[in-house]
Length: 187
Image 1 (cartoon, rainbow, N blue to C red):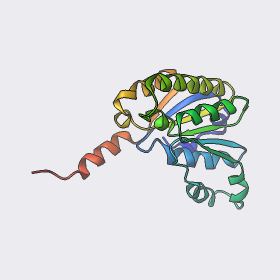
Image 2 (cartoon, rainbow, N blue to C red):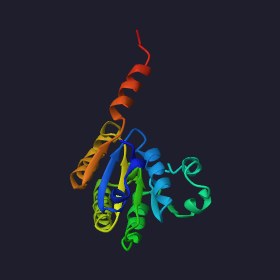
Image 3 (cartoon, rainbow, N blue to C red):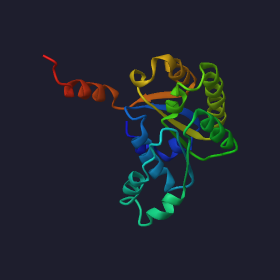
Image 4 (cartoon, rainbow, N blue to C red):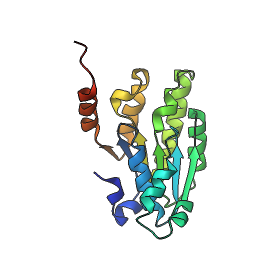
């Protein structure tokens, strides 16, 4: 599935979609953000410090004669802790008909210096914000494959998958096969 090929109707629909890929689907979501920025404002919340604006610029260059105007439509915020994720999502609650892309959503919730109870509280609050947002906007959340999530917090991904409208895996099987092929034999 190529996310940038979403039809106009699909881009304007509402819902919470979780996209899983090796690097939390950051590149495909950023490319989607570039395409969406051609027709209006796009809200990007970067939880894993993965927002490569050069990738967006390279994606836009062949699509428009004025990539700068399209880039101005991208509203980027970075969150480095699970506390910041919850706060930024709470500030997005009023958005209406604005695509929201969340990069590497679970990365900040795997911080072992935050207690399990606090992570659970912040995660549930954040997911509640995502659900409210998805009632008025298309919300795409990037996550790493289940195998890459810390086992102690794997229940967060399971719960997010349960609560979303759709779950899409991109290239995970290919990635896992390629990684296995790259490993050298010990014997």
